[in-house]
Image (cartoon, rainbow, N blue to C red; front, side, top):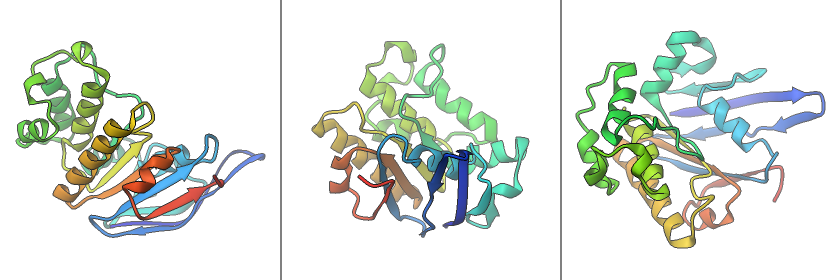
Length: 209
């Protein structure tokens, strides 16, 4: 499902990242661990099609990400890649349900699974609420729901447990794993949080820890 080979990226001559090859089947999970500055978020951005590497390839299914650009890349990413950012990327003026419908709209999906998704994430009762009225934990769940709104093949989570205590960190990881299994999607969690190793057996370390 996901094949990453020979990736090379550097912001300048003094900042080069050693990026390992990755081969994951549908339903697989991977944890990418690294300190700040190790390049883990750069890798996430490359895998999500938000950043183009200097060389190498990212193949998702039968599609080579580097072969797409502009609107075609945006549409492919919106339909096939769900990204859960460290800080929720949801639109404050909209309700919870409207945020999901917006994600559906951009790729021509109807969002028939949105209600079920919100229910599974425990925020169905918030579907008509404005994002500004939500707690931090609720907003994060909306961010997860929006990332999953189009049933992606690849789910990328950037530091999803960074500001959470042990109990809530475990809950969020479990939610991500359950949803990934439901869609038979590849799940990649990028973090510096060593606690996540207790929940994801397969991991790689960038830059040393």
